[in-house]
Amino acid sequence: ASVANSVASFSAVPGMAIGIGLVTVTGQCVGAGKLEQPKSYTVGFLGLAVLIAGLLNIGLYFFSDQVISLFGVSSETAVLAKSLIFSTLIANTVFWPPAFVLPNALRAANDAKFTMVIAVGSMWLFRVLLGVILGKHMGMGVFGVWLAMFCDWTFRAIMFLARIKGKKWQHRAI
Image 1 (spheres, rainbow, N blue to C red):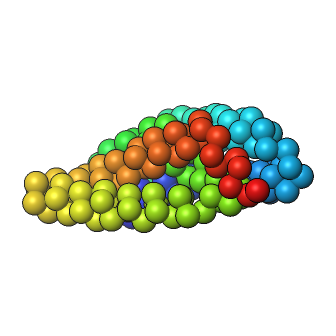
Image 2: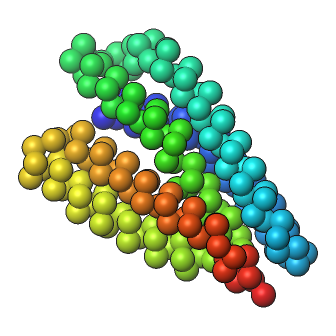
């Protein structure tokens, strides 16, 4: 799991950087009173994050054996790591960007309370509760924990996409 986590963290770096840039752009727009601009910038930055994640993750998919070999793990661990990496590469492209890039725009527009409530609630409901249920009680082990993490990302993505689609977040700074 630590090998897959390292690879997943690496593939999320461009999205993290784009999210940080989005904070500045959104904050500048809101500060200037241009309240319709943040949404278009947010959509553009999200698209860029998905595109870069997709390209990076396609590369990681094709070179996963070489990347895993850098960690010097046993063949059994390599098989487990490869399956976790493949599922993570898909989730990092589809669910991670809206779950972790979009809240940056919301926070920059003074909608931090919404993002905090969603993040904390989702973490406890999915990562902790569902992770224990799937991983321990349903015997799925590490796959269950990772599936719970993907459910967390999916829920956050849905909630943040819905919030961005509306207008309330754009007018929180007023």
